[in-house]
Image (cartoon, rainbow over all chains, first blue to last red; front, side, top):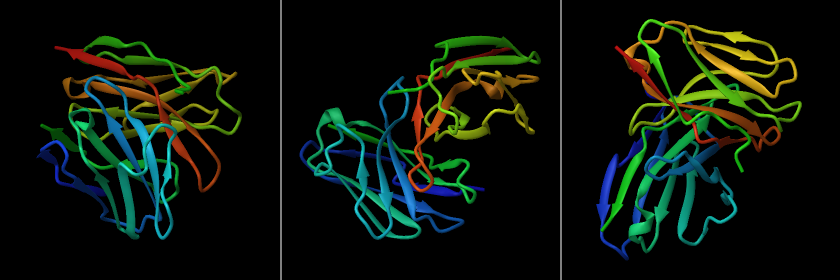
Length: 115
Length: 112
């Protein structure tokens, strides 16, 4: 069964608005969650590492003020795309480390379209 | 920067073995190699991982060269449902700070 869920699965928003994406760990607690972005026909790019109870760690080139991450509990992390623009349209995927930290479990992804 | 290189695409006949190569010539001694696959518009699915020994599970086999500079994922009897993008990934970092660096992946098409 699913280990990680994301909500919503797809969202359309207008340019200039903000949109929140939720990532939930269903089977176990996750002190760390990862957020990726994937443009069409491209690979996944790690955006940031979400840490429960502390600030997220952002990858180089990712604007932390634009992509707000909140890891409110051991089962929930949220990514808020602020002041979205059409170029933010992408597939956003979260993941959590496995119990033995050997693999990551990926969520089903959220497709964001900014008009 | 990605630490792996893979062919862009491959075709395989249904029922035959699919051999997907990956080059990771700059891999460090303690970095694992992982394989995931992604079916269109879904999250990646874990397949297998290894450090230096060959590995096999119910989905696939992973052959790692002795110098660890390359590896091959083998799907022994490919089916149409194995059509996907296959990613060879090196896990970097240390305990508590691990992260995946995805390469470009190989788009495998299994042909009937």
